[in-house]
Length: 123
Image (cartoon, rainbow, N blue to C red; front, side, top):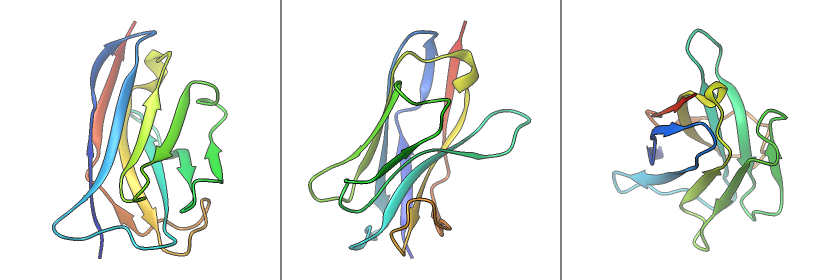
């Protein structure tokens, strides 16, 4: 079991930036080989994959809607993952979830999820 916790959400004006952090809690940790991703769910919409990163950090994925504005990264210990969000738009508003995937496939089935952090972008 891996317990994940997201921090860094908040309210920001359009064009602003936020940095989300995904860390483990409860004495658990992201094991070797796990991929980590950020999903988001806007009000009234389905949850979507925004960005993902492989264990090594060499492979990343970005949804078309965030390419060029969001950057996913992980620390050297590979236990903390970040999502730098720049040039935010009102349509980026939603709950952002961190998730981990045991097989290491960045487009795989994510088994472990955090409770989410709210991001609100005002126009």
